Every structure is written in structure tokens, then in C-alpha cells.
Amino acid sequence: MNSLYAEPVGHFSADNYRLFTLSFASVFLKETILHEGPINLGMLTSLRRFAVSFGLIGQVHNENPDSVETPFEWLHHIFRSGYPTSGTHSLEEVSIEMWGAESKINILQLQEMVDMFLEKEFSTLKILNIFVYSFRDGGALKVVEMLHDYEGLKKLSCRVDLDVRGKR
Amino acid sequence: MTSIPRELPAELYDEITSLLWNDFPSLKACSLANRVLTAPSQKRLFHSLALGHPHLQRNNKSRVRTSSDFYNLLAASPHIAEYVKSLHILDFCSFSKLSSPSGFDDLPNVLGKESSLRYENYRLENGEEIPDLDSRPVTSCNDDSNSAFEYWLPRDKFLPLFAPLLSNLKALTLSYYGSWSLFTFRVLISILHLIQMPSLHHLRCNFPEEIALGENVKHLVWFARTTSNNERFPLKLEHPPSKLVYLDTLYMDTPFPILRLQSPTSRIQTSRIQKLVIIYHWHSETQGRDILLLLQCCRDTLVDLEFTLCRARRSL
Image 1: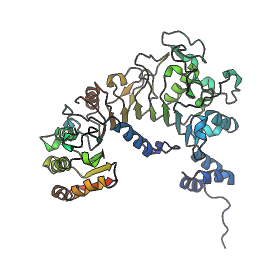
Image 2 (image 1 turned 90 degrees about the vertical axis):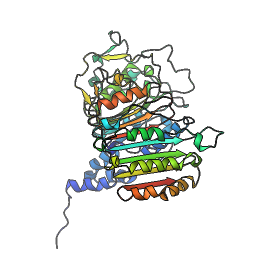
Image 3 (image 1 turned 45 degrees about the vertical axis):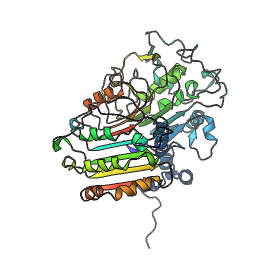
Image 4 (image 1 turned 135 degrees about the horizontal axis):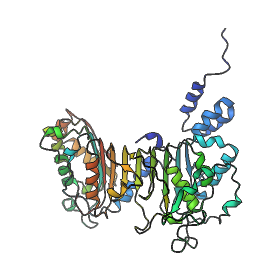
């Protein structure tokens, strides 16, 4: 979208709107998200960039991260929908943005995602952004540190521009 | 010793003011400092205009103006209307009661362009002529006069006067979440005029699918309507435009049937979309199927796909 026409006006800046959208969305995130479906990235022959943002909020009295329904399974399905031929996959940039309590973020799911991007079907991938926003100080950084220590991410960094960041 | 030229090339003045694009006190000072700086400074000062409720002006830092302020400004300097490229109309319901609007005829139309809104081109949904431009389509169930809060836009009397002057408008943001039936016909037609302008490239609003868009709209940000599904749009164009509207970017914040988006009136074509941003809402029951249809429409051109996932119970 042309940034010329997205200028901040008063307190309705683009950033503020995004924050508003995220906070508004988070109200409805006690139950997430989407499951498998018929979307096939392989049919999108010109697709170069894919971005997704979601929240991870479990049941109020349930602190077990395994019980939180997350969109990772859906994401795996979407990303792998262009298989089996690498020719159907032309993605060059993937951005994944998540927010929520760090206790709801299952690092194993993130690691599985990284492993998927190591597969040969993602040979066109040039940029991978993973942004984690936590509601508590240090929560996101803890997740990001664990991800940085993961061997798969180190392998991926050899061929992909990685930007893995956490905030708060 | 070489003498300093008295006048700099006009391009340099443009360059100077472009560096001050977000420094409004300096731009104001420049516009008053020298005649040659007035036009380039004003172009940047009024490039983006936000119209809102008077209470938004209480904050000194806010750049939101009321429509009456802008009308008065144009009455003195009508050329400024041509500088407006981006218009934000902000009407969130307010608890501040507005003073009762006086009759439309009480206001002198010093700008003299209202006739170009061509009210006569519109008919009621049933084909009849509009009985009174200052009346509302529905008066009984949607009247907000007894409500503790109200919107300023539906009965605004200034926008219809200066809307025809905004001839270079490229971007329109309409942040209004009330019912369209609260509008007077006059205000409604002035908004439709803005939405249908050939110069318009970027549109952000929650317009109903029954209306015609400007033929050059490329970027559409479409928000969910909060009004009743049974509410019919009260107006129709006698001779609606026929040229198709091919979108480059679509941002959808609504679980809305794609086929309705592509109505014969809106003429929206999704086959050339390059960027698609979709917010999944928690209450959507049919959105997955609609998104699939949309993806199939733009399968050859889509470069950028973005999802924001909210609560949902069903599959794509």
C-alpha cells in the first residue's frame, strides 16, 4: 500500500491502529484458531511474501501450554500445501508475529517451524522474520533466546536472512 | 565578487518545504515568510486533512479540524481545496452533544460548487425522487436525537459545500461506525461523490456493497459494517458507471461474502490483486470459503498475503 497515504493524523497513526487492532483481537483469543483447510499456496503462482500474526492466550485458569490451541498446525498445513514440487513454492519472505503470555508459547512448535523451512521446498526463502511480543517484561526475550540457541535456526541462518526478535 | 541571486529556482523552495513535511509550525512560518514559499508550504500543510468532532480539537497537538473550520478557511482561500490529497473523516460517536444544526439554507454557499454534486442523478431505492435533501432515509427507528451520544457527520452541513472542491483527492478514510440511514441525503450524496471521484486511489471505509466506487480505486481497506444486515442502502445512481474497478490491494476486516464485494454496482474486480490482508474474526462462519474464492480469483497475481488470526471455530 502506498505509504504516502498512510500518514499519521493526530493520534490515529498507522502504528497506533495496528496496536489497536492487536489489542482488539486479543479480546477474542481465549480460543484459537484455525485448523486444516483447503488453502493451497501452490495455486498462488506469484506469491512471494506471506505474513501471519496471532495471539496465544489459553483458558484463564489453565496454565498448561500444551492445552493451548495454537495455529501452528494450521500454519504447517498452509506452508506445506505447495508441496510436493518446489516449483510450486516461490516464497521469498515469511513473517510470523505472535503475542501473548510466554507461558503459552511452546518453543517446540517454533522449532518445528524452523525445521520445516530447512526443507528443500523452501529453497527460495530469503528472509524469515519471527517477532514475539510478550505481556510480561523479559518473557519474549526468553523465548527468543531459546530459539537462537536452537541448532536448526543456526543452520537456517546460513542461507536465509533471519530477523528473530522479541519485545518485552 | 558574485552577487547572490534574488530568487531561487522554484524547485529549491519545493525541496526546502519537503524537508519540513512533518514540522507544521515551521511550515506555517514559511508560508507567511515569503510569497514564493506560501504555495509549497500550504501544499504540505493541507496535503492530509482530518475532519472530526469539535472535542477532538481540545488537544492542542491534534491536527483534527471541524468541517466548519475548514469551510471557513476555504471561504477565504478556496485554492487550498486543491492541495488536499488525503482526507480523513473521523466520526466516532461522542458523548459531547452538538448544538442543533441550523437549516441548510441559513448557510451562505460562498464556494458555489455544490451543484456539481448532481443530486438529481440519485433516486431512492424504489426509483422515486428524493423528497427532501435534508431529510433522512429513515426517521423513526434510527433517530438518535434522544441518545446520550451522537455522530457529527450525518447532519453536517459543511461537507456538501466543499466536497466538490476537493478535486485532487487521492485517499479517503471514512471512520464512521454508525448507521448509514442516519445521514441526510445531502451528506450521503457528498460522501458518495468523494468515493466516486476519478482521482481517488485509496479508499478506507465500511461502505455498503451497493455503492459505486471511483473507477481508479486501487487500494481498498474494508471494515466490517456494524449496521443491521436488513438495512438497505437508500440511494441508487440513475446512470451508474460501468468501468470495472481493478484492485491492487485489499485489506478486509470483515467476514463478508466475496461475491457481494464484487457486486455489479461496485464493479470491484479481484483478479489483479497483488496484496491481500485479511483479519479472521472470531464469529465468522463462512469466511473461510469466501477467502478461498478470493484467493482463486487472484491466484495469478497475488504477491503478498497476510493473515491476522483471531478467534475462530471453523476451518478454512
